[in-house]
Structures are given as structure tokens and as C-alpha cells.
Image (cartoon, rainbow, N blue to C red):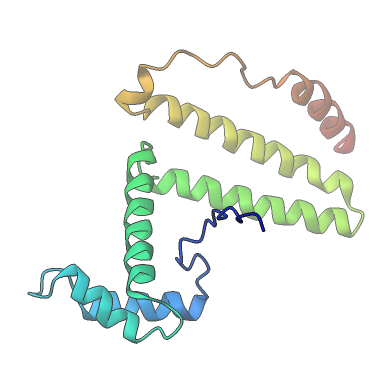
Length: 167
């Protein structure tokens, strides 16, 4: 009888699926057991795992590490400046205009969308201009993009249709 070769099984034993309820329990427990207390990380994870019957101490530790790394990546990738009030207002206007365009399309009022598209276009151009003014130093070192916003088609179609509608 030939010897059977041992099979390699990649079973890390780490829970990769966390339900929203488990995540909530973890978040609450992390708040109850802060790192600055005199409890070691291992003991902290062990206490938290007692509240999660389907998770081991290692599962909790790995999830906490993953959350920490995810937060670090978000911070490192966040090179944009926070939006100011004007930018937020323009974005909010564009969202409302888009909703109105959708409503007009649903009710077959297609021509009513022309001034709305025009306003969205003007808002986008204002946002682009603000972006150029407020670009972070890190972004100023980048080479210019190869593609530019081509508004020829927009300018070709919209003014003629818009003028014909209001004559």
C-alpha cells in the first residue's frame, strides 16, 4: 500500500466574514476597552472575543489590525483639501439638478432639461476653476493630464436648442 502524500491545506482559521451585528459589538467593545488602559492588547482582544461567540481572540486581533490599516490607507490617500462651503453648495445644486432632470425624463419633459444641463455645466466649470486655485502642493508637481474637458459638443448643441425653445 503506497504512502499517501500529505496535502497542504490553506486554512488560516481566521474569520474573514463579519456580520454588521458582530462589527457593532466589536466597535462598542473597542470603545469600552481603550488602548490607553493598563490592559495589554492580547487581554483586550481576549475580552472582546468573549462577547463574540463565533470569533476567536486571533479573529478579533486580525480584524482590529485590518481596521487600523484601512484607516491608515484612507488617511494616506486623502490628499485633497476639504471642501469649502461654495464647493459643497455647487455639488448639492448639481445633485438637485440631476434629480430634476431625472424627473423631467420620467414625465417626458425633455426640453425642460436644457437649462438644467446648462446650469450643471456652469457649476462644473466653476468647480474646475476652484480646483485649479486650491490644488494642494503635492498635486502641482504632477504633469498635466493628457485629456482636457471637451465642451465643443455641448456648446454646439445646447445654445441652438435652448435659443430655439425660447423664441
